[in-house]
Image (cartoon, rainbow, N blue to C red):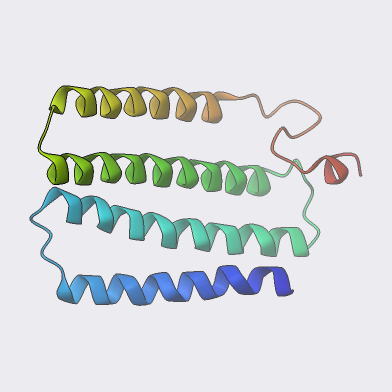
Length: 142
């Protein structure tokens, strides 16, 4: 039970940050919009992680549709978070340095292409196999 406490605290902190950010923020700047997306993605991924923990604690079958969907959704949320964080870092760096934009534009394009490819691969992997590719090995053998 103690392993989920950190996630619950993180979701509560993220919700508080979301509420405070909505009252104080001006969402006209691109950096603010991306940061808002990072906060929302953090809340959603925390809630999905809590849901997955509840599924595991209730002894759900590893190849269950609910379990696989929650793991794929959690992985997709992590990918979205990493993508948004990469874009946020590049945009903040561009605004601080005001130098050559072509190199940063290339970084955004490459990260977007990698994000799209990994997302498509992740959602199209076969679920019909006898072992779940996302499962913890000792749970898949049980």
